[in-house]
Image (cartoon, rainbow, N blue to C red; front, side):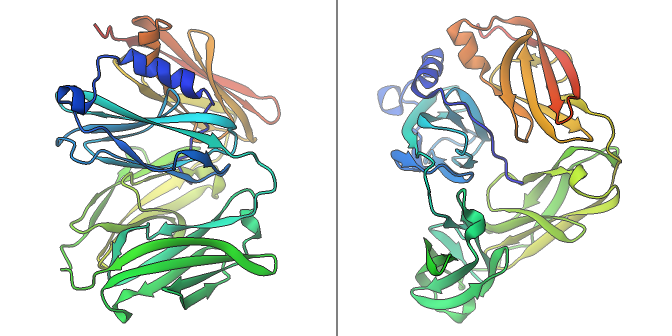
Length: 413
């Protein structure tokens, strides 16, 4: 399942407050700070109402060890310590009107620079389905055997019945399977630049299209092997319940083409981003023994994998546990509050309270709250010291459960 976060729509006002809170930051051109980050996508203007709008931001030339963060309004939605690029899948289906995206790069010395992008969420209307490349991405280099993956998007995505793949206008494959995946042997063409085109059929015609420019480079060296290690879950693997975050550490020399997550050899999730993790809800599978496998393939065909045997427990009464932060933790900056759930009925809503004041409500997993501590401190709406975080879950039959922790906000001064 994708890591998509339901965002509230507090565009300019929230972003302006946050930027004011970190007012000591300066632009690179003005005071020798880091390079200003820039948005690759989406473009300024209208973006679709869809579950998978790609937000990409880069900070090229940032000093080694710099951190790059992405915000929607005042809510931090992604952070890549030590990286100069973020690719975030943004769910805009519940949003409307104008939204401000902004990015911030922070150097190891503490200098900061920001960039913003104003977009408008398209009105729902009768928007036809679309298709998009999951892999390869536009501008990607490819080599050897690789998977070309296309997905249908939009509220009417289920209407896409087939996808044609074309290379520079020549038909490669026509796929009518529920998952549009094609194994492409790039050695059948000469090295160079090509245009991959995906054309989706819904109704009686092929009209939904997407393009990606790719560079075939089969002459590159094969590089070393790929090493995959599953780092989470860990500890007691007997009786896992609810949402379990599966994470992997991957060592590789070439760019990775795809990272895939399997339960009992059934593909559950794939990604080509730099965050190799997936949230598995054990309640979607039968109780008992299961095998988690994470596999990775690079652009020249090298492959590595790791497996872990676990036991999924029986669902029980409704319960919620705050897994992050822990009791007594000291928080010194923006924070992601995370919860795990165990439930026997459908979850309807999870509410997060700060000192008994409602701070965030969500109806979709992952059950988390991106807490803008820095902005709240700067605006004077949050004071350093001891505070209580409480999470409350409600299910479809009126059940309720809660958990709370006491934490300390460090004095930024």
